[in-house]
Image 1 (cartoon, one colour):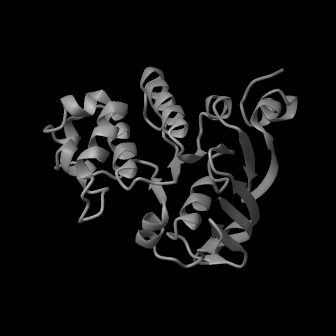
Image 2 (cartoon, rainbow, N blue to C red; image 1 turned 120 degrees about the vertical axis):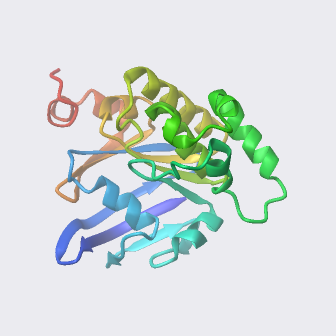
Length: 234
């Protein structure tokens, strides 16, 4: 479904990604783990067309998408939830969700119902300003806004950031349910162990390069991965 082949990316003269290759198949949850500054966010932004790539190729469903505008990628079926959520704080929950759907969307009510079934609290808070919500509720709005585009693939950047363990567990449960509905998920997450537990496969980024990859269950039991990236011993 998604293939990243030998992609490099920079911010000005600062190279962040070096010949990164990875893939995600339809129906999968794929995790990207690594220390802060490893390049996880830059990889997602490169896929989403928010960072220009140098060399390499990004292919989505057989189409090369290097340089394709983000709004075109959304129309093709990729949705993105950025680190820090980037919501409209002085707009209501309903208004923020509506921003995720196309301007002319005959099935907007059906999409709203899907999001509200996934996150019932958003129905209760639908007329509440986003700035008054808890961090967990705001993350639900951010994910819900992305789902309003009815994506085939969802890119999630650090969804646990700023959340309590209880709130994060609700988000994890929602990610699993979204995946069961047929949406592939690419998950960059600092809470690496929990992300890997729900993932099919995992890529380890280190200093902008892929340092390892494999089935998540196998990597979870790899002593080196557990010590170096999960912060736990064997």
